[in-house]
Image (cartoon, rainbow, N blue to C red; front, side, top):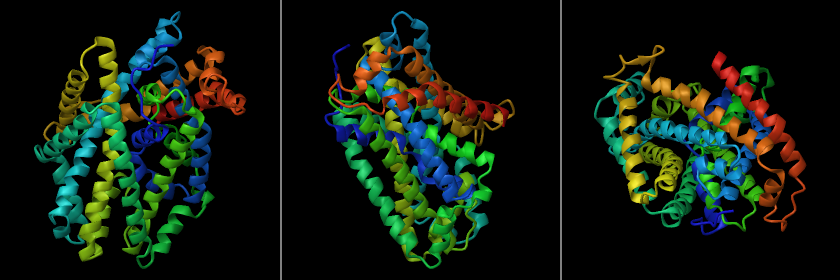
Amino acid sequence: MATQQKSFSSNLGAIMAAVGSAVGLGNIWRFPYTCGKYGGGAFLLVYLCFVFLLGSVLMMSEFVIGRRSQHTPIKAFGTLRPDRKGWMLVGVLGVVTSFFILSQYLVLSGWTTGYVWDAARGTLGSLGTDAAAISDYFKAFSTDAWRPALFLGVFSLLVLAVILGGVQKGIENVSKVLMPVLVLLILVLCVKSLTLPGAGKGVEYLFSADFSKLTGEGVLAALGQALFSLSVGMGVMIVYGSYIPLSDNIFKTAMWITVCDTLIAVLAGLAIFPAVFSCGLDPAGGPGLVFCVLPNVFNLMGGAGTVFAVLFFVLLTVAALTSAISLLEALTATFCEHTHASRTAGALLFFGLTTALGLVFSLSMGSLSHVTVNNLTLFDFVDRLNSIYLPPLCALFAILFFGWVMPEDEVKDELSNHGTLSIGFYPVLRFLARYVVPLALLVVIVSGILS
């Protein structure tokens, strides 16, 4: 096994960085909306089963592959099975996935960054409680040529600055600051939301177990959310796995990350829906909930609404930043390992490439909307690519490698830290990794293609 060249300085640092990667925009607004749509507590119960039985297994498998090999995705598969070089293509797929996801993610992150500015200077507040005006404002903002590009660029520079700082001084130290800030912001918003008149209806919407709403589509939504909310299927956790100290317990690390990721998603729901119901607005906002419904909620709060609008969009930007950092790190580390280029060169290269492609995706919402692929704008096309094809396929091949190709004695050795830890959970883990998780991923992929 290769000598570890760089790593997180502690288990806490590894957990904070990986939680930061897992917690993103989807946790803050997609999960709460989906949970309410498909039966509240009923959906939550199914989601919890999936995330702990399936999502955590995927995370552990990628951690094992990364730490055992001490390499980034492409070399990781080749190092662990040098007699089967074809598996290195899985690593290539992971790098491609990270590249496209980051390019699209920068667009969404630019929107959240722009809304921090607009909330702080009172632009959102000036729209009042006219739902049509708020919706029109978001449409005008997202289709504009220069404003989204400006904030996308600002956000990209923040990500670049962290990556240039390195693994410990950049990623780890920033994650140790941003994750507590993110939790604090959520808790402050929860307290405010839960103390509003009529907030109980929002809590009921989120947690009441209405199994009549838990359709087959809802179960699939819970499965998809569980499998991909942990930042697996894109090579990131293989890279972070190679940074995990050799003395850390991978099982406990994965469990802590899973718990923290799920808790933040639930807290986000408690911050959003009590406020939405208190203001008498429709919670079925879907993807537009953040930019079209919540500004109305904050404006209905009066003077304090501006403060909470700023806090909320800062929260979103922090969540986006921690995820984007992990994606750029995966690209940078892989490039540097294969070319022996400096970290600065690799970071600048992929900062430039992903920012440029992100700008193209942003313009496809407006001036480039006439450029389509299969009747979809470039942004919608890459969104479908990132949600249906790339991460599920990458995760499927990775779990097949972990469960069927990687030597079992090496898996046991890594999970037990060379025999020093008990791994009584291993038979269950192996069964899930070999049969249950691959089948679940196939269901998600097929259902996505057919939808």
